[in-house]
Image 1 (cartoon, rainbow, N blue to C red):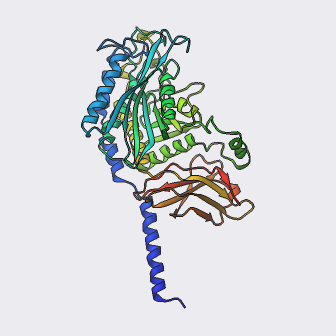
Image 2 (image 1 turned 120 degrees about the horizontal axis):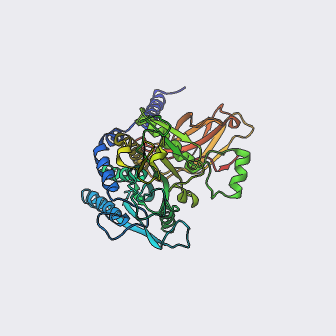
Image 3 (image 1 turned 90 degrees about the horizontal axis):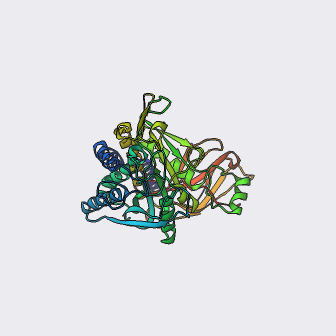
Length: 451
């Protein structure tokens, strides 16, 4: 016989679990405020300032106060310093640099320092966990080695750099558990030198990077094909890390995961967060490291095993990229301010800001996720619990051909769970940690198996 007391305790437990589950599913009003706070006017002002330096070629003038990459990077640092002064010095702002010579590449016209501008907003609970948003400082014209001719680079990539500065203005008003890095990278056009330098710096300093959001061209809405679209954008991500081991390759052959590397999971996270908080936007998952045969500044981080993606406009205008300023046959060439849509740049800046905030407020992802259930009617998962006060964990699964996670179940603060009736052969699975405020970690694909 079951007593009323026992039934009461069971009911209370059910109610508590239900409330925890509801809280784990909720949205955060602060995210909507972040979207509202991003300013198209400030982004426009910053793009105009950056384009106004005439050229920001990596090897251009470093002495002038009005022209060249030296003036540009000093201005960027002054902006980060100003933002920091308004948040009780919440940003650690510094130059990170590496020396390149003509022997490093045939695209290096003379020896020079490649200088990045870095601003770190330290997390309160996990200061060594980092989310990065990068834009590129440098620009180029038709000849990437021409360090004297005009190269305003309004969209490529003053737009991404202005976005990183604006994100710092907005997010510096909040406190986060993990650290956020806003950075201007140099040397992109000549060989991704700035990204290589900062990625190595992060590795040497044992940074735990949970995501790199590389923003390269986020301001153009009119494609060279005539398509005009101010809502779509692309998320480029590689399928699996280039650093994977032979064991990991063998596991993929038998257990799957060909499109489930850490960068692909980061891309799915950005896609999901955007659709949740900015449903008017159309994020496009592109299953490729970057545009066909090309590269961006997330690649050096990928090369060292860090998760990184590229966020950019959906429709490019090649008449405005890597072009000398000129008019031919009635067509205006060159990357000038008039080709940038500032409201669109605001939207993509907001996409970055809300994803960095969500990740920085989320608890760490579970470690050592394993899966079992071979020749069984149910899928079993287990993982190592993270430290700290969390809501619990959520298991995700999807068809093996589906691009996004289709199903999920919040399972509470446990370290293993069996999905009854879900056959392991027919789906892919992953696990995310859920914080008390509902923010989730990136989904972790199983890295091992058990019986």
